[in-house]
Length: 228
Image 1 (cartoon, rainbow, N blue to C red):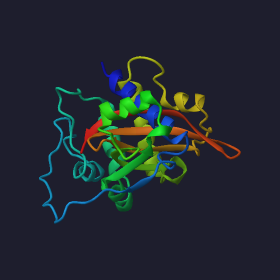
Image 2 (cartoon, rainbow, N blue to C red):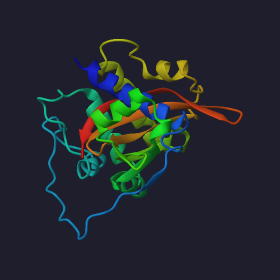
Image 3 (tube, rainbow, N blue to C red):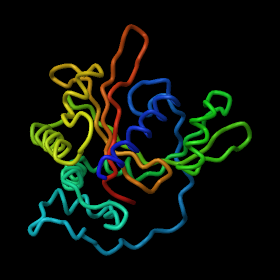
């Protein structure tokens, strides 16, 4: 059922919100570059998904140099995959480089709820080190208001693909965001990609609501679209 990976994405969003106490993306988490392996690796051959367009766009090919397709037996193709890859390929060189850079997240164990701690250990490979809960992630997030007109259109392609891919619940992604505090012009919406644990890549979105000094994140959800 295609909804299952959307639900998993929502679970990831809930976990992130619980960890950071709300707020935009992972801004509240303590991130630091993970140790990098010595030496340079040769670029891997470009492997296109079986569902790739007959004449893929430059953006799609650009995404394919970073993302790997999900095995069909693990997740059948949905329109969300193509829409997400096109959007990923529209990111700047700096944004893609930021996503490729593995980050280490270190959180005080005392500040992580037991259920969240269990989820991170079971699904993300988190481990306890000296009173800290440590795991790795790849992340990049952009504000909707910073997107170019072409990128905004690509985002709305995601909205259309969402309606075609999700079979249960609210199928209108804009309505989901509006209900959770998104402004009509989407100026407080963030969209991006996250690979908690450094493998399964989820397209993520959220409405960031600020009330005085308090920041909260609503409508956070995601969809499994690739691997790295």
